[in-house]
Amino acid sequence: LAALFSSQISSVDPKLIYKLFSVMFVIVAFLGVLTVLELSRLRLAWLESARAMNQMKDYLIQNIPQLSDCFRWKTTTIPEAFKPWSVGFLKALQVSALSGIALGSTCAFVCLSSLKASIPWLSSTLVALFTTFFYMCIFYYLPLKRIN
Image (tube, rainbow, N blue to C red; front, side):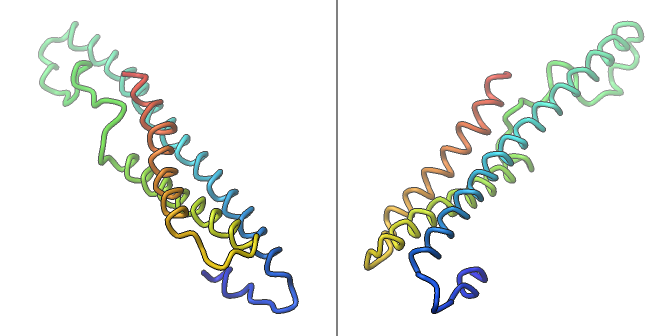
């Protein structure tokens, strides 16, 4: 919003400003892809380290059975890679929603740059919702589900 209000320059062609905002919001959406991918990779790295630690725990329990009650997670009880409502999931959802809003804004600014009379609210909203769903499915859910 600050960028919008600070760009109220009367000497600059509005089409140029709208095109620049379109490009800026596409960049924001691309950074959202990278962030969601990073969150899924962090979850996968955590899972790999948990499995490595459990391999050591299994060895200890096999050699010293009295230690079996000392460990909360066993190899069979490690949480799944995709865990809804975890901190990583919520962060991925937040970034996906913001990226969706950015692409919805891109849709609006592209229409404004073609000097349409009004913003296509329905199209912008649908783009935002589809992008949020797409990011969560393709860049977060599928990489994590593939591991289990």
